[in-house]
Length: 137
Image (cartoon, one colour):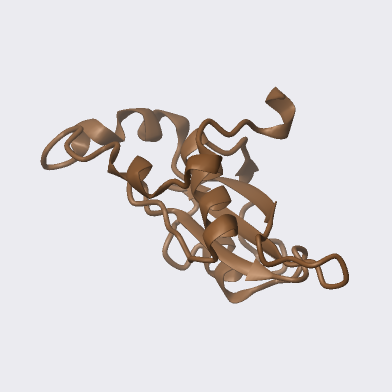
C-alpha cells in the first residue's frame, strides 16, 4: 500500500503488551478501542483481515503520522467474540509507533510526566490481562 503511494517503507515490530491487551478487549467486547497513551492504535472488525480498510489506510499511509516521526507499526488480529464457525469475524488492531527512543522517553515530554500513564489498564477486560505475543509463548 505504501509502495503504491510512493511512500517510504515502515518497520514492523512486535506489538506492545498494551496493544495486545487493548485489541483483545476490543475483540471480546465489540468496542472500538484506541491507545490512550500514544494514540497510534486503531481497532476495527472485519470478516477479511487482509482487506485494505479505511482505518488501515489512514494509519499506513501516514496522513496523521509522518513516517519520519512514526517509522514503525504493529498488527494484531484476534477472533471476535461474535464470530461464528460459518462466518468468522476478526478484530484487527493496527498501530503506528514512534521510534523506539521516542517511545521510551515520551512520558518525560508530556505536561505532567507519568500522570495517568496506566489509566488504560482500567479498560482492559479481565480475560485479556497479561497477553503474550505468539513469538513469546
